[in-house]
Every structure is written in structure tokens, then in C-alpha cells.
Image 1 (cartoon, one colour):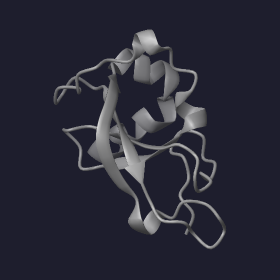
Image 2 (cartoon, one colour):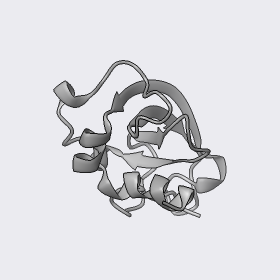
Image 3 (cartoon, one colour):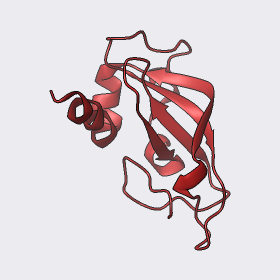
Length: 108
């Protein structure tokens, strides 16, 4: 099964930049593509991870195997090294679909 970007809904081709969005206060992480993250200004990226409860998103490098269709596969999708975080306000602006997932998971 191909891995799709949580923000754009598009499949992520094997070899493209693969990142994962996560938070310490949720047992959830999902794939984010270069397309989803490319429009976020460097000035909006924070160097320290979000604190639990602040509502932001941590962005990590990620890895996965190649599917038969040439995309990354969901079967081995794993977050890796932390790269940057986004405040809640920045995530609402640039990653609204991804951010809504945390609310859906918590039932809020």
C-alpha cells in the first residue's frame, strides 16, 4: 500500500523527501511530503521540539521501503531524526489538514 502525504493526500514517490509530523502528546505520526513542507518559511521553523500541550507539530526525517508501484510503502514507515517544529499558529496556516488529525484522534 502506497504512503500518502497527510496534508496533500498525494502519494509520495520513493526517493522524494519523506518527513513525518508528530507530537509528544499524541500517539500518532503521519507522512508529509516536500510539497506540503516547501512553502513554510524558514523563519517559521523552530529549532526546539514542541512541548506537550502547546498544539504545535514536530517534523522528523522519515524512512520507508519502496512499494510495487514505486511509491513509499506504509508498511515500514518510521519517523527518524527531529528536524524542526512549528507553532500551533504556523501549523494551522501551513498544515491545516495534518493538524486537524490530532483533534480527530482526541475527539475534540
